[in-house]
Image (tube, rainbow, N blue to C red):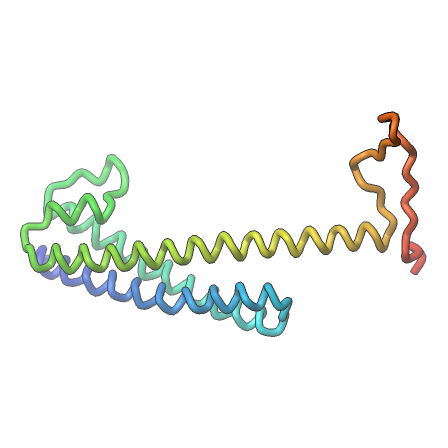
Amino acid sequence: MQTLDLQLGQLQSVLEELVRLHERLVPVLEEKREALKKMNRTDLAYILVHEEAIAASIAVVDGRRSDIVRSICGFLGLDVKKGPIKLGDLIPKIAQEAIARELTSLRARLKELLDSVRRLSETIRALTEQSLSHVRFFLRILTGAEDNSPTYDRRARERQSHGYSVLDRKA
């Protein structure tokens, strides 16, 4: 049977590992953002593989973190059946001040990194959606597909719009 001190030490190690992994992820996401801006498919393919590997590692380590937190909650008599216990709720219950301070510091650093990841992910999502929108627009132009929105004349009457394709569908 493991002691509470051992569990807290393992939690600290796991949080340090999560911080390191997220510190590796942030520059990869920045590279991904730049590759999307430059439409560099070669770099993007490499970046996606690297990002996926880091994300898989984060998932494994986070699973260990979750198991350790549940175990610590058992030591402290906290009810985990109500739902997952957040680190911010757990730290005040820890009697060892030095460990509690270190865990608080790691939690703050991890939160900063997660905010960076969230912002970068939102930017990447917007760039991807914008790129897809441009591709769809150009495909409509090339194929002559009609727009879903009608065209109106000056008297607000609907006009027939004829899509003229740049490319023949036979091609």
